[in-house]
Length: 525
Image (cartoon, rainbow, N blue to C red; front, side):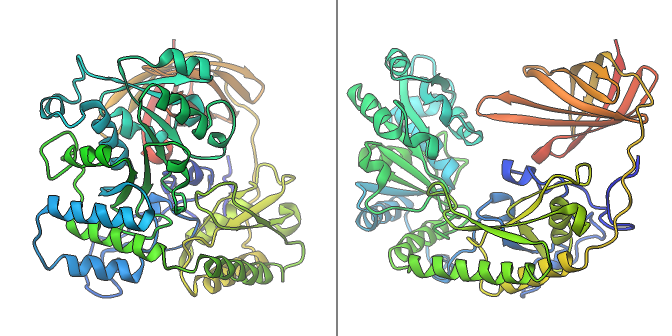
């Protein structure tokens, strides 16, 4: 099988895919390590001095690419905070009071990220600040151990709630919600988003139901804009959690928890420096003061001017791209408060231009400087499908728009020559049941694939230790590729098996999205 790539280029491994959005770009990769890390250089060359190439962020606030760029005032506050010792309880008491003044919430605390805020809030609702219960966690025997969550709100980040030992009780209707509430109910958790704005379990409706039973509600609003007064607290939530290192442009390792004072003070007691379940999620004085500075600046920033600047950047990028005939543009407006910024979408006919969206994205990532965009579509296997490239200005820095515009124009105006994609006919029959041995970084697992084959197309099922579901795939020559995406808790796990069949054996690798790769050997049963 001849792979689709520019001749002699793009020999990169495909690892930069940590979130669902990042995983959507199949062609994205990061360079292989080429040399041993050099001594650290305390200059603007800090990252390159150890062999790490920074990226231009045209994607948004994703943790895998270090979230946001903290504001100058945040950097200054963190530096100044590092020069003194303070008592952490006294510090958080004063910061909590100031956060309340700034946000018009009853109270506030700073945490070690939004996930930590969710965990501390859950611990607070379970224990009420009882030291004996705090020490017993995550053994919740005899304690409140259930969290009600609307099914639409299940998400990969609710692991931060589950890690406390609670059981997630999924509900779809108000009647199911009422039936689920009981003496074991510790909390209600909702992830904010378009789905939480409508229906009988919208945030206002769910909060009304919970308050009727005196059950606290937390809203996960990690990447949202901070509205003052707070929209979620006004809708009846008891607590709301934000990431510090996203739109607030505070420290990456910080989060913000706002809401009911007694619950937030309990959440603080459940966290470091106190010896409780949350001790491992320590927030330092530098992050605390940096986060406070970020909220202070949020109340002073000219958000309308920022929006106009983003639009001007996108205009510059689209004007440069559209110098190439056949390129069109569309500005996509945000649906909710998360990553709230306009997005530029460029579109073209890949067959006419000679390059696909996925290929442009990969070339940008592997160029100099490296540019991470907000996704793409279009691949060489289906050149009839329109190709797109998306650019998000949300976390771009001044001058980045010129870098992005020049790089995108250069690629689209003069695409590299690509090898012809030759797809051979199927050369093996892999129908049947296969016992699969997987070898991860330091562990193993046994899975099973049951495959049906129709010419070169594959279908069937995939069973893991707890997951099970359908698969799709293809046979090209002796190369077998099988895709599996299986739901588990609030997320889905992706498995892409690629191997070579030889009789009753298939050997190869399985790509695990953000979790890297594993080797596998499959034997026909």
